[in-house]
Image (cartoon, rainbow, N blue to C red; front, side, top):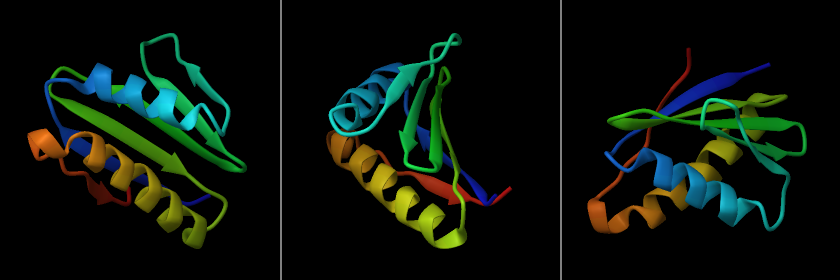
Length: 95
C-alpha cells in the first residue's frame, strides 16, 4: 500500500494534531493513540498524526496512489489553514 510522510515544523504540534482530529472526527472515525498521537480513518486510508517537540509528523497509508494524493491534499490543506497565522506548511515525501 502506498505511504507518504508529511512534516510541519511547529512548536504547537500536539494542539494541531488534536485540532485536526476533532475537526475530522465529526465525519470520520478518529482515536487518540497511546503515545499522544491521533489516528484518522478515511474509509481504507489511515492517517497517523504524531506530534514531536518541534514538528508534526503525518503518515498516510492508502490503498492506491490516487487516494494517497487526495488524502494528502485534504489533510495538508486543513492543517495549513489552521496554521495560517503561523505560516505553517506541510512538506510531503514518499519513503
